[in-house]
Image (cartoon, rainbow over all chains, first blue to last red; front, top):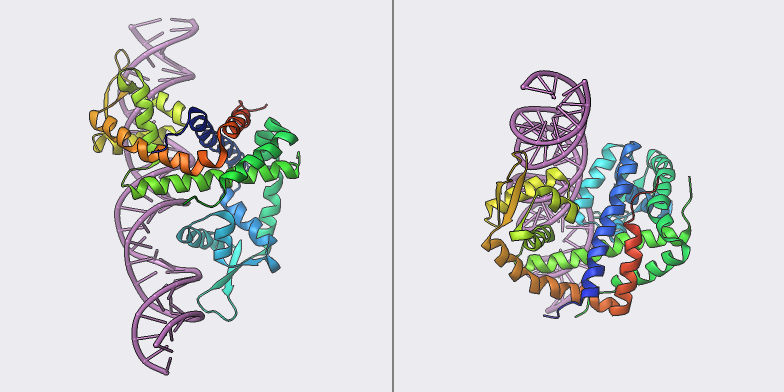
Length: 148
Length: 148
DNA sequence: AAAGTTTTGATGCAGATGCATCGATCCGTC
DNA sequence: GACGGATCGATGCATCTGCATCAAAACTTT
């Protein structure tokens, strides 16, 4: 094995802790405002950005890093809540298009002030502009494709 | 609302993505080697570090950022697997001590080579020493207590 | 065009998590 | 020492996630 250095282990632990902590705080903020979880928001935002507010499930998965079976059931719940609608995919009957509804757009817009405020408070204010840029750069390296 | 800047939003998104990606890769590595999840490892490691391999559930929670009810049931499973043992806390019958067993120590030791190797491969190698240090510093800021 | 392969989305089942609440014990104040 | 409140760990219930697998449709190869 390649034993990781102390500095690497420390950074790794911090990544886990920091993510868990900040996500926890932000989720709590959303919940106390009566909103659903971040996953719901992520899906709504992706759809809203897509052409005509539509994306295939596979596109959503790639964007938000969900598992296929997981997204399938999340969409069930969101559809039951009237936030999205599944429509046939022209020319391929296996596939489908997920379309955001007006209610879905409205929810995303109501959530953003709370979510954005929480990002500022629990994330942005701790860092400042320059350090946010540095952090982005470092985290990008972690997203590289796997080594072989 | 305090609208977060573009740089902050980008860094925030990267934090989520990077954490999810790296954790996913490392968990997959552990699983394919037939090991339980990172949560189990975290608990075993904390216990091993504690005096006589013992900690109270509250101490474990604080160390690994678990919810109380969640840890309670994780300990049920780990106890059923013979990895830990619950013993009375001297002088307070509400509390308990969780003690790592020999099997628990052995599992932690068998997991570390796989886990450590995965940390190196999916995390350390992407960064290098100096950048790991920078990342630690930035993430530490996120762990500050909440603003009021 | 027939047969095998791949892709897409859904689902049964088990395991894990979140939420609310519980009973038991301890501590502080009177 | 009795009462009220706080702390500790557990649990019933609903939701969510992971795993394996499925059926249907599309694509590939011959």
